[in-house]
Image: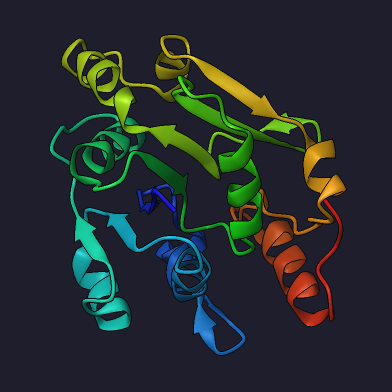
Length: 206
């Protein structure tokens, strides 16, 4: 599949006590190892964008590409720009390290239904659009560069300037995809939800 998996690490990807979310252990592996394993089902190339590569190298080694931002300022959009600049494939599956239940099946469905000229394909989950766990076309690079150069570095600024389509939640349910792929671990309640899901034989429905 013509898709590069991308994990965007930032200072937001921390829980209390400065714990890096991607390095939290779930069962016998860290969250980021779990993410990489799921991405490798469909991605030959996986990129981690981070300003702290030394924290991840002992865990990931050379199993994926690790890069840093070129532009400084907006961490998220700068990281997206770095990935768009260096990815080898036409589409990028972009996530954050705090998402424990990535679903390659969701991406396969989105890739099948995408429009030829679509720059962004966004999944819907629980009534909300998920900018992370979306498919971004490398054609977004020019707009992203312009925004960063103009110091208008926000994800919403990017969305306002590109073409996008939405894949509704009903499409995933029709394919019997029920993983809570949009769950992010940003507080104690979400952490506990992750633990509850991981202890069940099957994760809760979206």
